Amino acid sequence: MTATTHDLNELKRRMQGTIAALKTELSGLRTGRASPHMLDPVQVDAYGAMMPLNQVATVTIPEPRMIAVNVWDKSLVHAVEKAIVNANLGLSPATEGQVLRLRIPELNEERRKELVKLAHKYAETARVAVRHVRRDGIDVIKKLEKDHQISKDDHDRFSADIQKATDQSIAEIDQILGGKEKEILTV
Image 1 (cartoon, rainbow, N blue to C red):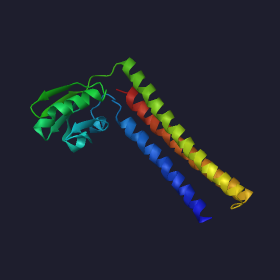
Image 2 (cartoon, rainbow, N blue to C red):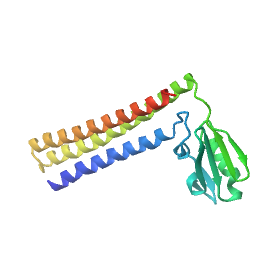
Image 3 (tube, helix red, strand yellow):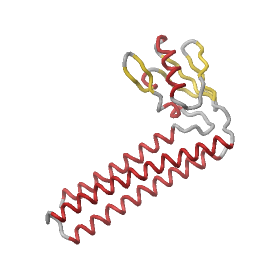
Image 4 (cartoon, rainbow, N blue to C red):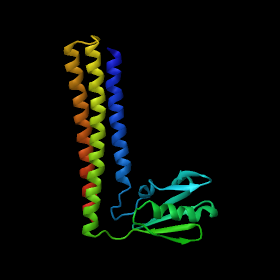
């Protein structure tokens, strides 16, 4: 019985992992304000390997609508510039020595709607992932019951616990999406 309780905790951990991934994806969406997290998805080809931007440069916010990227190694400036452009964030770097300046343009209404659609797509992907975790958990419980390791009552109780965890995770995803949507649509 402890293994099944442990399984529920494992399922909850996997669901939380999905939510954390959603938060990371949403933090990369531009909302009209500069944020160092906007550059989190940027991977730089440095020293023969793909590295996160924050491992080759310092990202700062000198103004509300500006991001400054201070590249530590002069030889990587071009690679960082290329990585930012290739990340499809809609940002064009202006290079001054080892510092790249990224001006955050005002978002027009059409772009805001596109970002909201993209946020909804990320959220739906997260919901699907949570449902896959639920399905995995239910499959384990069905197998345990089929192998006569748990009773029908245990099966029903564990299924209800898994569904409750799923509902909580999806509610959290919807709450995160609502907050991001509000952030995108308000100036």
